[in-house]
Image (cartoon, helix red, strand yellow):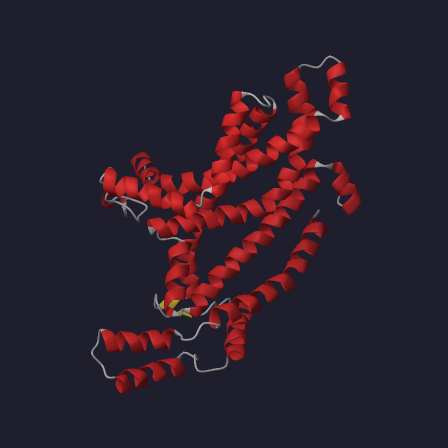
Length: 336
């Protein structure tokens, strides 16, 4: 198993390198950079003339290496990451990018992980429930829920909930994790409840989409498995219906779903990011949008690379889980 993990991690390094090149090139493709943003701010808000603002913008561009060719900027960025663990300096937040990521990424990953766990447990459970009651009203109801979860855009659901909370229920605390009285307070049950009150819309929306996919896949896989010959044999031996489903059908129906977990974790992450942008929570999503709007290249590139890494990590985790669940995979891959 250790050799398997080392091989997978080694094979992920070239993929990350290619992704970093493509990401950096795409981010740099639009015209303008942060120096142009500074010039426009000096002219629009500072009352400076074009010549004065342009002179300061050019000085800023030279001081931070923005005047160098894109290829040089890229290798300076990657070289700093590899040799010093330096992801660059954020021009917007005026601090190292590592600090910006360290502040926002743990919150984002925690929310995404909660959404992933809830979506997996509920989706698998509802999928089993629907498959064992095929064509009943329960199956039809769950199919409708699955259809809505997969088709309604998450940002639209977020906008609807924001409208209801703000304009119908007069909720004013939008865009934060805690109420003011709990901001710097130590953890307590009251602080946890307050956190849930603030983040439940983000968790509910991201979970709803993942739940729908998990439920649909589990239902289809389980229906196929229930018609397999070994399941009929188990029934013929006199096992109860519940034992046949849970001991024989469900473990085999989980195989494709486990492989799907390789992409569902990044899906949950992007779902959290989409909804966090609407709710302006201080997580990764608003930071990406804000940095892209003003040309803060290193913040955008670092966050995009983190999202790419989650996809690779998710696939590695899925392969390991599948190998642990299915002995045939271990034998074919030479895993011990």
